[in-house]
Amino acid sequence: MNLTTETIWNLQGPSVYLYILKRAKDTAVAEDVLQNTFVQVHEHLGSLKDTSKVKPWVFQIARNELAKYYRKSPIAISNTQSPDTEDPLVIDEFCCFERFLEELPKHYQKVIELVYLHGKTNEEAAKELDLSLANVKARIRRAKDKLRERFQECCNFSINKSGKLEGSADCAVCDSN
Image (cartoon, rainbow, N blue to C red; front, side, top):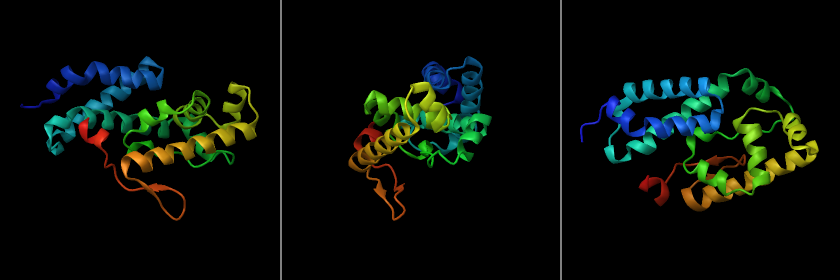
C-alpha cells in the first residue's frame, strides 16, 4: 500500500479529530492540533517503517501535539509552577495511557484529567470537585499508583530509584494497534 499524507488523512482524519476534540473540548484548539498533527505526519511519513501500524503512529503524533499544546498554554505553565502540584505525568511516552486512564475509578479519573490533562492546579480541582486539597492530593497519589501498576503489568515498564516509570512499550496490546 502506497501511503501518502492524503491517504492517511482520508483514513484517519475524522477519528483523530474526534480524539483530539474529546480531549481539547474546544473546536478551534482541536482544529489547530489536528493541523499540526498532519503537518508532522507529512514531514515524518518517511520514518514510518511498518505501514500496518499507521493508526497508532498517527494517534501517537496527535497525543504528542496535544501535550505540546498544553505545555505551551498559560494554564499548563501556571500549573507547573504551583508548589502544590505534583510532578506531571509524561503521557507522550507511554502506550496504553488512554486505556489505563479509562480503567481508573471515576473519582480518580476525574482528578487526573483536571490536573494533568486540563492543566488545573490542585486547588482549582479541589474547588471544582468540591473536595479538600488533601483529598485531591490523595486521589492523585492513588491514581498514579494504580497507573504505575498497570504500566508495569502490561507494558514492561519499571520504576527507577527516584520512583519514576522508565522503559519502553513492549506489550501485546500496543503491538496489535
